Image (cartoon, rainbow, N blue to C red):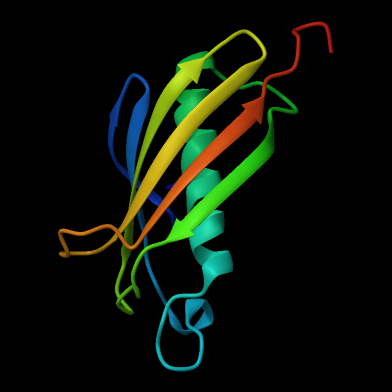
Length: 121
């Protein structure tokens, strides 16, 4: 199991499918999943996707995270589909789509950039 109760359901080089169980702590009034919960999901999914390719690297950090909330998520598990768009020597760029479990349309789309430190750092 990954951090925060996340479960990696599928993995291929450069892509991951991650499930996040949703509980009361993730919900805003009205029963929608909070934005910070979804941002944590995309950030953790991207981090796992990168490290699955390059191995454990101390101090690999998020330098940019842009998220578009597309529709109201159901109060159900969220599924993140993360994919590396570019993996360079110093930067990795990824995109993540989030779905409410069982729903065909994404509830959010994010792009992230990670800084990968030099081995000497």
